[in-house]
Amino acid sequence: MLNSNKALSQRIHPLLAPLAIRGLAIANRFVMAPMTREMSRGRVPGQDVAAYYRRRAEGQVGLIITEGVGVDDPAAVDVPNVPAMYGAAALAGWKQVVDEVHAAGGKIMPQLWHQGAMRDAAISPEPHVAPRRPSGVIGPIGKVSLEAEKLARLEIKSAPLTDSEISDIIDAYARSAANAAQIGFDGIAIHGAHGYLPDNFLWSGTNLRTDRWGGDPKARAEFPAELVRAIRRVIGDELPILFRFSQFKMQDYNARLADTPQELEQILTPIADAGVDIFDGSQRYFDTPIFEGSPLNLGGWAKKLTGKLGMCVGGVGLDRGKRDHHIDSGSAASDNLDRLVARFEQGEFDLVGVGRSLLNDPDWVGKAIRGEPFLPFDNNNLSRLT
Image (cartoon, rainbow, N blue to C red; front, side, top):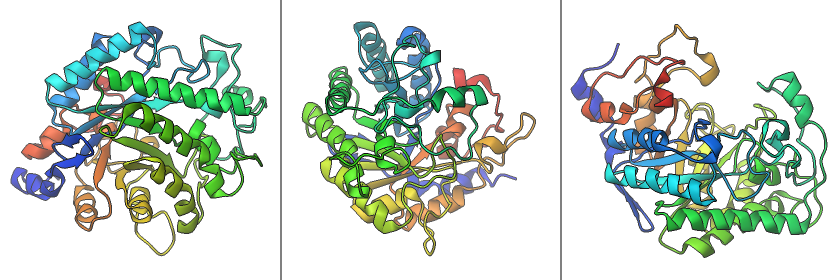
């Protein structure tokens, strides 16, 4: 049973503090987490996409991070309705998105995405373009939700990236970041998690290289650090950069990027030094401890180890994980807010990513602020498309 409206609004009050990040000021600590939608035909976001993000801005989300957006490389993404951050039509569509969000008083960053080892050429408009992989492999397969046919395609080895190809990909990220800055985005988010390209370099399961791009954890961080440096050069000093990372991979939900805090520090420090302002620690549940002997979540460890802002994400406002829901099962939508606020007040993290709760209801943050009851969670709720 939900608490009274007054009690609910009071208990999230700490999360309503404003925050300045370089030249960006956000009204509160709630961030719309990036969520793939595949609603941009021909990779061009339309008016419906602009309206989708505007509704979340009107719902008082402090900062919106878009769905994954393909960078200017033909092997960046597969499904044809994933949007791009290059080409006149796509950039015009994103300009409309930015303008709508700003008109509603919101702030927005694009999440630059390169699928790397996980790109399925067979379902892309460019089936002849092979996936880009540091060592030509998808990595060890463990617990996955991929169909057997898709997994069989992805497990086919490809040629390892050459130095020239790596340089071209870094340039592709920089071009896309420059495009985003030019049309008015408020910062740049990099998808460096879940078994995609930057994560392919970070994870020992996909990076078997012995040159400057591989080796120990610090050496494996060289590629994402170069990405960040290249992006920082083209966007300047005013716009913040956010970097998403994770332990788990699409290749294996039980995979680990780092087994100890010391390993994680080796990985994150070069990326932080390159110019990242926010580390988005992606995990399934925000209150799951990452290392034995400490309650810290992934965003909390990033903050502790690097001194940068930490963001947590995973099941905020819900009491079950993504694959725990059934069509007919609602969710006690506010059950974990007390735990969330308590950890925030202890200084564990600085920002809170909200994903499926905002798919379910674009006004979820507004309801939390006003102390109104949340909508019951529906895994098939079509508001995710609107």
